[in-house]
Image (cartoon, rainbow, N blue to C red; front, side, top):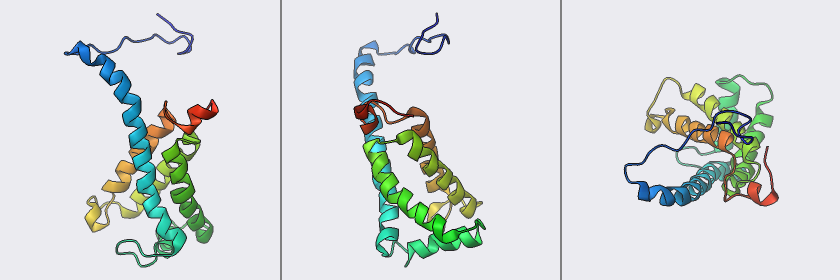
Length: 165
């Protein structure tokens, strides 16, 4: 069976449930839980951007903005590290708010996924985050990648404005 929505690709029926009576619950809970995930992700990301914006300490980092510039300069060796530092700060503040709201999700989320990949490169090969490892940014990157592919979802600003990328 093909469907115009899927571009002619075969449409698969939903998996059989051991408790079929739960199907309606899952159909309602799925978009709601995704909205909660998107909002929580945005808020967590925002807590990393706000100290950079305000010039305040964050955990063990006395100056997280300077720390970002240091990593960009000395670990990633990117040109214009200050410009990249400001981009990271804006991504983690304005971009985080946009993700929480589900606004331009498919534009902002891939940028966050790339940022998290760069953080993983900086902290590789350490895994445990408590040792400045990469487990936390790795998970954040996977969630951002998922949001890149899924978009804002049913409960998002993208849906309210009537479209997304």
